Every structure is written in C-alpha cells, then in structure tokens.
Amino acid sequence: MILSYCTNIHPAETWLETLDALQTHVLTVRDRLLANGDQPAGKPFPIGLRLSAIAARELLEGDNLPRFADWLAENNSYVFTINGFPYGSFHGTRVKEQVFLPDWTSPERIEYTKRLFEILAKIAPKSSGGSVSTLPGSHKTFHAEEEPIRKNLISLAHYIEDLSQKHQIDLHLGLEPEPLGHFENTAETLAFFERLNIQAGESPIIRERIGLNFDSCHFAIEFDDAAASLDAIHSYGGIRLSKIHLSNALSLNPANPVAINAIRGFDEPTYFHQVIARRPDKSLERFLDLPVFLSAVDSGETKATDFEEARVHFHIPLDAQPTSPLGSTHNHVEETLAWCQKHPNACQHFEIETYTWGVLPGNLQRPVEEQIAAEYRWVLDQLRSSSTDH
Image 1 (cartoon, rainbow, N blue to C red):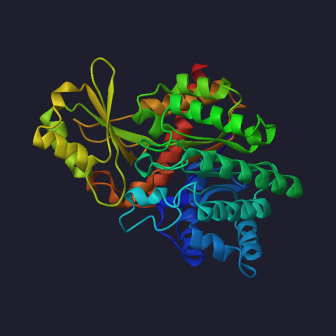
Image 2: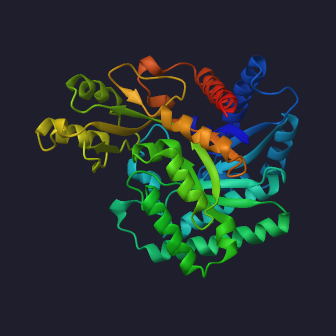
C-alpha cells in the first residue's frame, strides 16, 4: 500500500508554481511526518501530484523533466500517481462544472492525459507503477454522447499499453465516479464498464489499463455501502481498482432547521457541492449544487421534512468532525480502509484528497501542513485499528 496526499490542495497552475508548492508544502508535510514517526526515516516519500494542462506541457519542455527527476532523488521522494481530473484552474476562481471540461469526447482531454502518462512513464518507480485519475467521462448536464467517450478511452488504453511495454512499468488510468457525473454510483459504474468492454471486444488491455478511482466521499454521497460497492466492483468482470481516494463528505438531517442553517456556511462559489437527499423509503433526490438545494428548501419547492438525511459534496478533513448538528461520512472511509485490509492485493495506490482547504469555514481551518499531517495520522490510526480487529 502506497499512501500520499493529493497536491491539488495547493494552488498551482504553471510548472514553476507546482514545483514551488512541492518545495514549500510537500517537503514540510514530509518533515512533519518524519518528526511524528508517521514516515519511516530513510524511506522515499510518495507524492500524489496534481498537474494542470499548462504545467504538464511545461514539464515536458526542455530539461524540466530530467531536472525534476533529479529534485525527487535529492529529496528522497517519488511520484507514483497524478490527479488528471482538473484540466485548468482549480483554485481562486469559479470551478463548478468547468472541472469536467474538456470531457472525454474532446481531443484536448486525450492529449492532456497522454502527457501525464508520458511524465509518469519516465519518473515513476517501476516498483510502484503509475496511475492517473480522471473524470467519469463527462457530466450529465452536458448530455454527451457515450460512444465517443468509450472510443477515446479504448484508444488511450492502447497508448498506455505501448508506454508500459516500452518503459517496463505498470501504468493505468482510473475513472472517478462523481455525483452527477456521466456515471456516478455503483450500478452506473458497472454498466459503463460493461459497455466499454463490449465495445473493446473484451480486450485484456482495456481491463489492465482502464480502471476505477474509488473516491470514498463520492460513493458515500450516493448512499452506496462501501464494502458492497467495492465487492461488486472488484468481482464484476475484473474492474481494476486503479486508485482509492480517501475523502470525507458532509451530512445533515434536512428536517432540522438548525442543520439547514448550519449548512449555509458551506455554500461557497468555487466548487460544485452536489447534494443527494434520501427519503425514509430509501429513494434519492439529486440537486446540482448546494445553493440549488437551499433555494428549493427556502422556496418550499422541496419539503425538507420529506428526507431523513442529505449528503453534500464538500470535502472536509478526515480527522475533523464538523460542529453539530452537521455530521460527516467518515464511517464510509473507515469501511473502505477495512475492506482494503481484507483485500490487500486489490489496490496499491491510496491518496488523501481534501482539496477544499482554502474554502473551509474558519472553525475547520488550520495551517495546511498541520491539516495534512493530521489526516495522515488519522488514516494510519484507522489501519492500525482495523489490523488489530482482524
């Protein structure tokens, strides 16, 4: 098991900005972990890199990539995974649905992802292999045709296979289901992969190179049981678990007016905060964004008392519970880690992903390196606890 945190928490769009974030924040986190005994002394430090399209292109120019490889060696670190979901700006501006663009119908998305794999093929250790996570094809509101998405993914799989053979390294792409994505829950994920494999003629290359990035926050928002989802994904036709994102969502009782008022503090304009609400009969209602949900409740269009629970796509730190009456889906993360310990060969790439640090309410905010180190400690404590239980 390789555990890192995703550097998409640090604002950076150019390669120089990205390198500065690595030098400023990542090495500080590493040193905190070393001091706490959470990173073994002398063991190379794994980095979960986020590269924008601009940064990826710049990194491949001139001698930037060899120099970065030297930097990694000098700092006893390595990159084994890249977050290739956000193509462009990801902080300090309205991201919302733009994070799904360009989608997998677009040549820009293909070329960007190819660059990320070209980078990984040259710098990731052969012992770890290299993974890239990406969006689940498109967003439902784009009404994208699925056949071109599948065609582009099949083409990319062969590109990844060629790179893997050339560099003798295991490379794989992880599609990341997200609320209101082209496929978003367990059932839709299984159905999509079935159609993908049929179109690819059941090619073993597709099964090896195109897998799933299981984000515990996203599946929790869908009210999908973690163990049941992972069992279904792992056993169904051999869908590869490319990477697991360890992340936590908000939850609330919509029938409680105090909870509705408290969730307003998380309504911010940068990111999509999709809401899924569940009725007592277990049926679900989806809302595009938190302000859409709040508007529907305020106007009376949605009767909040019809629901027993709502979950909100707002990543909060793994170790920090929001103030009552709000809750979180941390049990889903615990169940995900427990399942992984029961299936130690199912997935090797793990990444803590709480990119919302810059928009967290004040009572949840602390120095970013302190937060990340605390999240590492929480995960390691969960693993130790789960290991003792089993």
